[in-house]
Image 1 (cartoon, rainbow, N blue to C red):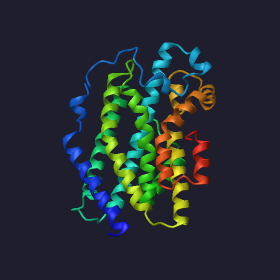
Image 2: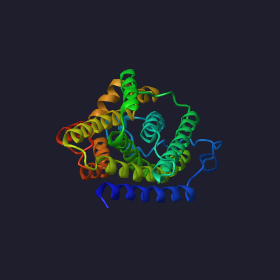
Image 3: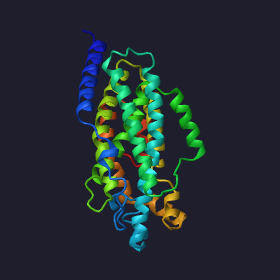
Image 4: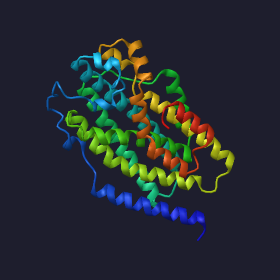
Amino acid sequence: MTIEAATRTAGDDVSRRLLESSATLSYDPDAEIDWEAPLPDDEYGLNPEWSTLYGTPLWDRMSQDQRVALTRYEVCSIMNTGIWFEMILQQMILRDQYMNNPADPQFQFALTEIADECRHSIMFARICEKLDAPKFSPNRAIVELARLLKSTAGGEVAYGGTLVAEEVLDVMQRDWMRGENVLDIVRTSSKIHVLEESRHMKFARQEVREHMDGIGSLRRAGSATLIAAVAVVIVQALVHPGVYRAAGLDTREALAAAKANEHRKSMLRNACAGLMQFLSEARLLTGPAVSLYRRANMI
């Protein structure tokens, strides 16, 4: 058996196991989340440690109500970014699987993942509605660049970009789902997302391995840099500047405090540790890519 055939067989095996897992262990947000339950006034939107201002002098001066409000707006901003990128992801996967053999397990799990992502996006949208948060969107230039990405990216770039968003959010949500002072609606949605996204991450890693098999050095260098650029945009888009104004803070002061926040930088680097290890193993952690990741405090 050739290396290419062995890699494809391994991919089919992974996809079969993921399909079986999806059939036996998935959640319905309508049934799992109590959408009508009132929101306790003193519970955060995410663990305070994950707030962009936690550990700064500004956080120390904020009232408890402002801290609660900020974390609720921050989690909604992160969910808005998640919805935005999940829509990009679905289109990239559909293009990558276009006209592939429907009998292949990889094709079937790709469609299963798209169905999951649709449910996740609706779940996040309903949470933002429940928390009465404004819409937090990337700026126009980023939106248009993303439109180009979703129309052209494929292979290791599509699935590598997928991993960036999923891995970082996975680490955050594993903390949120255990946060005793975090809103139950966020804790439960985090549990659902963590469990189902773990399958998506396994699938994305296998797809990256398959697409990287035997590629040339020029393509590898280009893909590594493009994935890193996508990562920087995603991480910087997670928390929209509008969250500070919505929480009653001075936007300029809050942005400066968040930018200088060493605690935030440390949390982000820890969240990216697993992602960086995989990218290194996949030969996608090149010099220019590392420079971009370091600039975004991801490494």
